[in-house]
Amino acid sequence: MDKLINGVLSVPVATLFIVTGIVFLFIAVVGKISGKIEPSKKSRITSGILGFIFILGGLAMHLRQEEDWVPKVTDKLKVDHVASISEIKPSKELIPSEEQNINDTYDHSSMRTYFSNEKEPNDSFLTATPIEINTSVHGDIMPAKDLDHYILNIFSEQPKTMKIQFKNLSMNLAPEVKLYNSEKSEIHHEYRTTRGADINFSYTVKQDETYYIRIFSYNLSKNNGGEYDIIVGF
Image 1 (cartoon, rainbow, N blue to C red):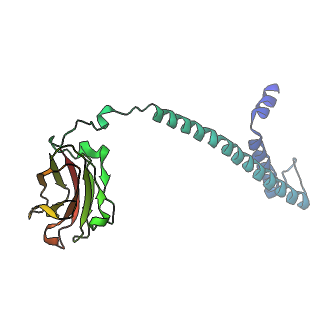
Image 2 (image 1 turned 180 degrees about the vertical axis):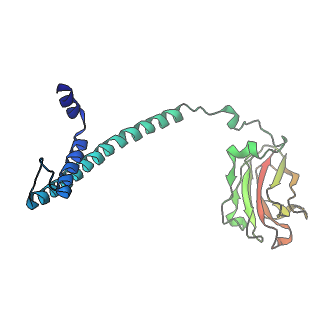
Image 3 (image 1 turned 60 degrees about the vertical axis):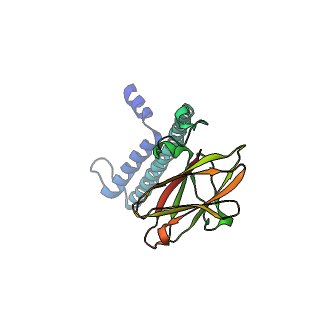
């Protein structure tokens, strides 16, 4: 008897409510149980109402318990996630070295940690996108007659050789690159008629000078748009 009582008491209240409700509904539906229960019509209606009340109450308790449990689990997950992020240490290999030189083989994947993007609109000298030394800039000639302009400020105590690398990321773009001085006069011109071709050239820059770079598709062809990367260094 004690075991039975302890077993009943250990059952969640919500479950007891649902079981009780099922019993009341059973009585309401079946009605008379020969020799056991013989409820009247009014009692059967009352029993049905009580059954619904007990079942709804039990379900509500179950839902309440689940809502109380879910936040605890999500809170733990958040704590574990933050802890895992805090353990991550930056790799020295991802930090660009000051001694890095553009003479090294151009490796698109190794430069991704210090990429920047062109700022549209940059279709004129007045809206040119600033570009920094040894920083690969990602651009896009789109539409095909698009003009991309970049501005580069050189600070040097003596003349030095500036090297410009244009990395074509499209098999559709036939590139054309022009270099201008601070007075916006053209001082160098390179182009390729082959789609997907790269352009690499050097130019001796003056002390403390501003330069502009214009990139576009060869002869402004309407069919030669595409993406590219450009990097300037010494």
